[in-house]
Image (cartoon, rainbow, N blue to C red):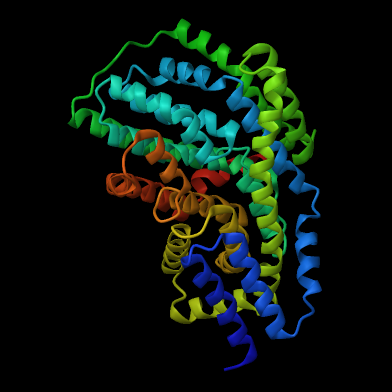
Length: 433
């Protein structure tokens, strides 16, 4: 075998072996990359340079701001206002508590940008609310976890920012377009979950509670609008060209601080150091992962892995439908084993050239990849949202995984719609740009 083939097998093989041995993902990437650098005779200092250069990005500054914005709004008391608004909006339908769960996640996701944060913040309230109305704990927990994936689709999402950084080596991707493209997919996922919830509610005769009250809905909206304005600052600011992504994120942080301190009064000045501590812990994990993945991505490009994978796929079939199925299966499979940010950084340089060769947009891939890997957050063995759902509900992971099977199918339907009918959501960024 050639040196290139051996080096590729070593890079991927060592990485996967370390992952299966439960070595932290950062060390797995770093060790696999370092071994390959030595084998290929490349100066290891190149690895350090790639680590630093991957972090030397102005756009990357938006990530800590988005994380901080989510922490401030979560601590600020917006959770209750969003649930109240969602209850007034859809709580009067058959299966209203389930509908409230889904809609609240859609709104909260636009603030937190995180599936885990959504599940951890809204989960205890939503599960209790649904159980009080007669819903099974298993169903309530599974719906809470599934709806939390809306949080990584609806902007602003730090995973979308990471995708634009990962795609930069292949093509330029507009973060404004990507943000706009996330709204409709988030709504598609919401609608599919709401349809399934309605079906289950009718089947199990879950109650209808309350009735629609326009005045109460308007009042609840104005109570919740202060928090949702932070999202508008980011999205409208970027699309209108008033701010860069980083500037809009910084402005949203200032607004979130004001809202949390003076309007919702969910935290005080003494709580701010604790909030910053949480942000620092999260950010440290993200940044070190971005750094080591720079070396890994460099090796993938150096070894021409994207071209090799592309050639292999097209040698099997040139049918666009089949290739898209294979790419989705690859993302779903890896999403079950490796955390999201890492996979976005590793897979984007490999899949994006293939995706574009099919005549598809990189914006389209960003949405499909984020949803694919979002489903991975709900699957064993490493699904972080699955672990959070188990912790807050007290249901063992094994039982929860089985209960999630219908939700995997429902989310799979949403994934197929977004994969094969990109016109369902691409019209919005195309119209704005």
